Each structure stands twice: as C-alpha cells, then as structure tokens.
Length: 161
Image 1 (cartoon, rainbow, N blue to C red):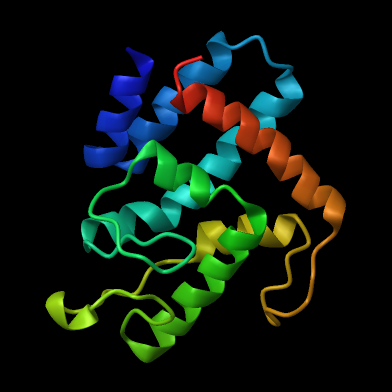
Image 2: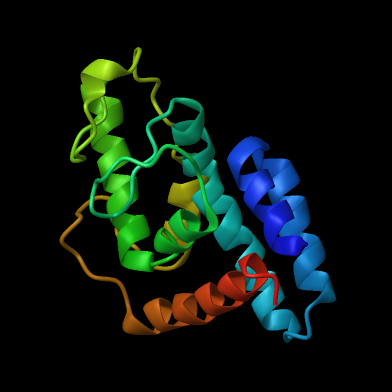
C-alpha cells in the first residue's frame, strides 16, 4: 500500500505532499531519531530539483538518460551524494545556458527551459562540505557514508518496508 502511494505521490504530487508521506513513514519506522532527522532534509533537497524537472518533462538519471516520470527507482538513483553533487552542477550550468545541458535528452522536443531554483539543494550540499564552486573538489568520505545510510532508509520506505 505504501509503495503504491509513494509511487503515485512521486508521479503526481508536489514536494510538500511527498515530504509529508516521507515524514509519516519515518515517524512510524523503528529507526533511530538520528536517521529520521537527517533523511527528511535530504529528501527535501532532492525533491527541490526533481519536481521542477518533472514538471518540465526533463527528468533524467545520473547517466543523462531521459525518464518520462519520477519513480522510486529514479529518486533512489539521485540519493547518491556524488550524483546529487553532479546534478547540482549540471543544473547550475543549465541555468546559465538557458537550456538543459550535460544530458542525453533531446531538448529540441521540449518547450523553453525554465531555470531550476538551486537554493535548497545548494544549502543542503554545502552543509555536508560539498564545494559548490569547483566540481572537482571532493567532499569528506564520512559524509558520503552517512548518505549511504540515509539512502538505505529511504529505499526501505519507498519499498514499503
């Protein structure tokens, strides 16, 4: 039941509805409060860019392949901290160019690219020592490992476990 609900929410709902469902699922989980407190802002950061991409029909995976809808699987793919960092730089470059760049999408088939607000994602990433000025600068491995734990929890929620 949760899986169906989360799939429908990811496909059709706004960030607040999706975050509300995540929050409810986290509250019902037997996970330590530490994980619950870390996971919701992580989801919010991801959704802050995926929902606008979904609305523009410009969803893509970390390899740049087009996706027609936001699914649990696609959401989980963006839970990887390195992929999320790359997404932030891709969207920042796209905002500068006025079109989606660094993907395999045929942007001639879409209407006008609307710049994506990167404030929530940028604030989140900088809070985990991700350098937003230079894409080649690494972040601490401990932050990457922390996100692996959060991804495991998010995956369980999306799978309805």
